[in-house]
Length: 238
Length: 384
Image 1 (tube, rainbow over the protein chains, first blue to last red):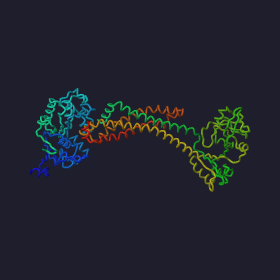
Image 2: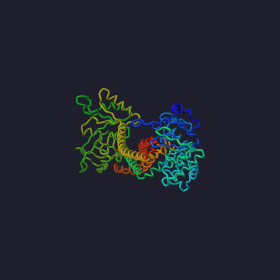
Image 3: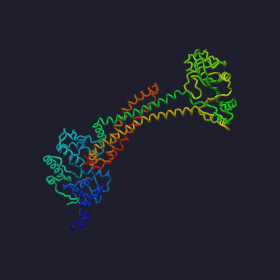
Image 4: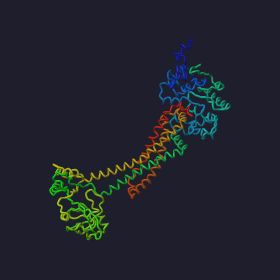
């Protein structure tokens, strides 16, 4: 009860050196039949190097939370700091740069660019960042080989690979710009159990090397890989 | 550049669709270029056939309204007026001209020809003689090139004009269409013969040949000031003005035909718009992906504009090559003379059409590209 009362001051209780800080973050969607509060004054801090699982039933607001942390969206009220930057003050271009440089996305659907080859898919964020050709830079190739792809696969289009291979490419793509945070949205949702486990092992390995990972899932087995679980119910941290 | 590469690949992926859209641009560019080339050739051929260089001032009487302007009711230029003109235009020469037409008979052939009565001493100012000499006697005449050709006239031929007979003393050079006199299909006779035969003392027009082209306005003004001081007695034209008007008119025709070609380019623009909208709609998910992993709005916009640009470039390129053939065909059908095709003024319409084609594609691609750039990345990502 006492904590409820103190909530307006949650900014002070959150650690300063957190890589992600949500302070009273609220997200309201205006729909024709009235406003929907998707997130209600959420206070969350993520420390560097943490592996966090976000769980909750569908419609609980975990996708909204992921969109906010992914800086695809900004809170209606309250503050959100990512890698030290207040997202509410950023323009669309600034938010895009933040996503490009500080966040690596891993999706349930893999979401590779169908027009580009496997190698180009991984190079793409690097090209966006450096704004020039990356010919001769072997970083993308090295990463792809490290996540378990073979040299022959690099020139293929994503659709020619299996789901597990595509997700490995996605992981390589997410890591290419050495982001502060890795955001995973049901990373094993489209994979069979064995492959899913291999992918999760890979993510754990990435986390062990110091990368902060935030992962949305409703699979308890997958959530078990995380060091901390945040459960969202009705737009609030339960 | 990665965005150019992606645009290129998307076009290749939708080969048929892209080809059809580019074909629209090809047709538009060919239409606009060949129409422009046709118009330009038309203008060139007309200006070339106008023999008169802009060095003449033409003075004709004002056609008087009944009960007004007593002096000009006869619609001729009197001797008194001529003397005034001669005085004010000096040192330029004023050539009084009788102009009419009559039935002529050349052996068994009968025809109607224009007649010009000019002082023999002034005939060389007005026309060039190809063969023969200026008539010395009053019954001598010069035959225009077309007339001579048609009836096989030579120096020495006899022609019956009305009830009189004249002897041809020379044949004129071909002159083309003129603003002062059109001698190609005419007989030029001496002023005295004309005056006697048709019992006419006053002149139909006076032509002033200006020695220095820059004096043309001064001469016009001097004549108008002298003769039109109280009443409008004469109307004064200069051939330069007429020439400019005609060229202007043909240029307008040229613009008009080009605009007709432009309509097909607008249609092509609509098809580019359509194809680009399709491309955006098909790739909403992909736009969501690239936006979420850090592609900025203007970069998305650029990618789609490149796509339109490539279509425009291919369409305009092929169109430019084909419009050379299109222009050739249009000109040879309409003018039966393709000699103006290789004129710079005509060929200019090829890059002109290509440029317009490219601009049309880019403008058509603008809205779809803008739409793609401004999709909400979250919704785009969720799109299936």
